[in-house]
Length: 340
Image 1 (spheres, rainbow, N blue to C red):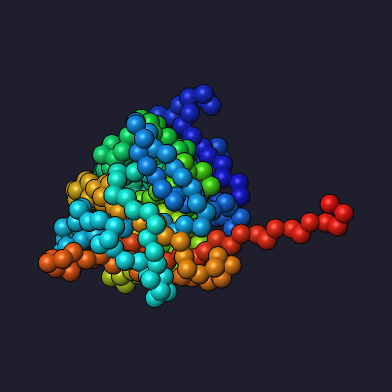
Image 2 (image 1 turned 60 degrees about the horizontal axis):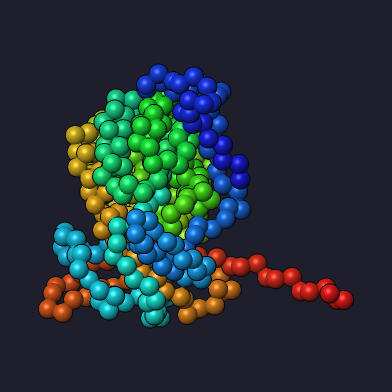
């Protein structure tokens, strides 16, 4: 898949004025993936070593990022033996376990349709606050979307570059949310340096321009063993009917819920800062749990995963993680030719 970027890069030409998007003719749209992208890296273990991190990869390991709650409070002191993992009802043996602030690859995917024009300054500020509250080793890219999606800043840890990418405001057209999500998940699978990956989607409307539907979008993210998706739906105001708000809310809740993230629906633009801080805290507070499936990798089809946690003498704990995955089937090795 070709995934061209239109970066705000001084070396590539004159810089745009703040808030001014490059002409559409000069910006390459993010295309829906062709299904041939490489799978994301999976980690058997990520361990802190001095000032950096070392990733040990194991292509057969299933990695789950889990947030644990007691009521509305995050639980931060659990151990490996407090967790159980079940795949399609069969108990799995947990091989790796961590509760560490791992560096993350983040996709900031922001609605650039006409109805967002007055909301973008507050949205951009909150998105940047989220990045600044994160691990300094994180990397992020920016996708602005309306009826097409454009990557306006490639992966970077430079907050100023991310600010410039978010500043490419050209509010127009429809809302191709699903296409933007799938292409951004594919971008993470192909180019991210971190095994832990997150998409943060900010939109104020219902999808009305995608070639994909909601079910295809969720399927593709799961196929990639893809990112945790957090959605922020700015569904307040009089622009949408009650039915449109209900449909948009359901879509964002499903997209987040199936991938282990959260969906937020602020009542006003002033609440976005608080939500951004909550998203950053959630990302930083997750447990990383790895196991080898008891099923052969050649057995295809969706595998449902349930993660539970319990503490002696404490009340019920809620675990939020992705609902499952599609195994990556390795291509069969070619038989050796006769005479070789």
